[in-house]
Image (cartoon, rainbow, N blue to C red):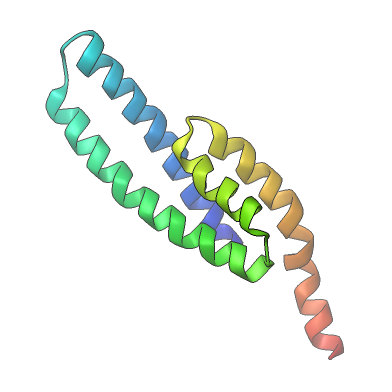
Length: 106
C-alpha cells in the first residue's frame, strides 16, 4: 500500500508540473491547446487514483482528518506532493517494517 501511494504521488506530481508547463504555453504563447487538453485529462484520471490510494493509506495508518486532508490536497499544489510523500514515507516506513515482526509474535 505504501509503494502504490509513493508511485502515484510521484506520477501525479510530475503530471501536475507538465500540466503547469502546458498551461504556460497555452495561455502565455497561444500554443499547445490540444496537448494541454490531453495532459489535463490524463492528470485528472491519475489524480483520482492518487486520491484513492492516499485515502486508503490514511485509513490504514489511522491519520487524523486534518492530516488526511493535507495529504489529499498536496496533489493539487505543484511540487508539494514530493515533500509530503517524503514525510509520509518517514512516518509509515517504520510501521510497515515492524508489521511482520509483530504479526509473527502474535
